[in-house]
Amino acid sequence: MQNLIKTVVFLLAASLVAGCSYFGVYKRDIPQGNLITQEMVSQLHPGMSREQVAYIMGTPLMEAPFSSDQWDYVFYLDEAYGDTVEKRLTLTFDNDQLVDIDKSGDMESNIELNQDGGPGPAVEGAGEGTAVPQVGPSGV
Image (cartoon, rainbow, N blue to C red; front, top):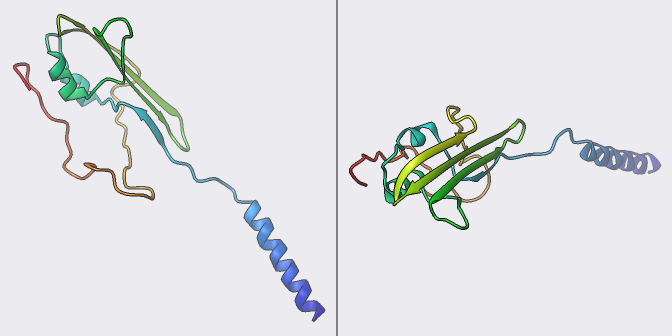
């Protein structure tokens, strides 16, 4: 009987120690802000209207507080087991026409966001065949 108690106590202690010595913690990539791709940026050009820009890029993350002539798109990705990726796109308008495009960060690098990799409901519109709409300079 004492051998059985010792065995149970030993197995219980071993399982607790094994549970506490887990080698890693599950991490997820944490994207924040507006996704900015080279494909989207290459469609922008001076002379576009605000509506055309919003159709391509979406609504801006920030607008200048004292003037609505500057839109800022910021993207930040904290990779779970890697580096961080930061991209910033500042668009300046004059008379509702795009006049300046200021880029910072690596716009050429493609970022794959895995939408189906975790628990919870699927993200709406994150299926195959989802593409960035093409917009011409004449209208939306």
